[in-house]
Length: 198
Image (cartoon, rainbow, N blue to C red; front, side, top):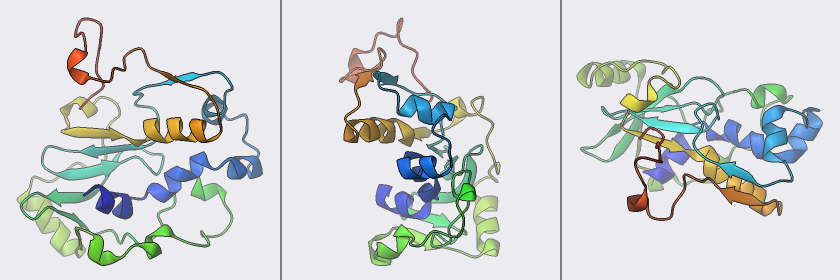
């Protein structure tokens, strides 16, 4: 399912944030978020709702993401009976977001063309079929409020945390563990630790 979601959600745009040459081209090296990512001192990366890069899975199975630099928007539905991700949005269509909108012209190459569709647990349906899925599973909200809606949802995947750490390590920049981080989640002291939404 992780492989399918990586294919079907519009993560391409979000990944542009980690393109140093793009930020140079746009003249935004001093952008606060990028400056923090590139800061020579070690940064402690932890859960922060303002960061772009959440995948939110609601209790009913609907999947949201804020990868396009907006509030988390519904993109699909996980059918647990068939372990299939269902969507009416064509994954081969590039969805423009905050970063891509600053680049002249369409991407020269879209990564989804490298993926064999047979490896995906994916079903693309018509808008009429999608409306039926919504009706049968409790019509989802189109967009979530951040962060007030987060605690009520089943699972939140904060992709930006791993991406930021990996990015800094690849550039040889230091990384600090958050003081809230521990290798064994069973060792958390509930009095000292306030977990992010799950």
